[in-house]
Length: 167
Image 1 (cartoon, rainbow, N blue to C red):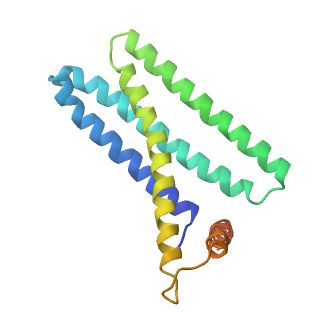
Image 2: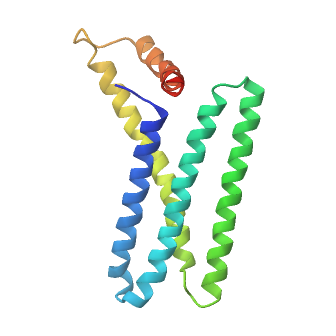
């Protein structure tokens, strides 16, 4: 099975969008009025867009870091992490401003929406682990592969990403 960074990022974005839609739709059951649900849903939508942008930035950072030396890659990843943090803070301040000046956006909705990034991250870890275990157990010869084969499969993940990006 192919484990490209693009496939993982797309799956993560899909999980984020589904969670945001589920939370925004379920908020009507909590608030019981459209007037209170709309600002909450706008906050969820803002956070969903930010989370998708963060996944895209993270994907680009990992791809760029694989082509650099260790120190340069570490500096690059730290700087992109700082950029994603700044984007999150800007969105929180903007949501707080619009929440305080008219209630157009529910700040709680933005915070809940931002948490979907973490839920999606943990779910990716689970999905990938399940895929790797399935691939190791169901090897080409029908038997159980060794742990060394599983480790080599994990190491090949980054080399497959490099090959896909060079095409």
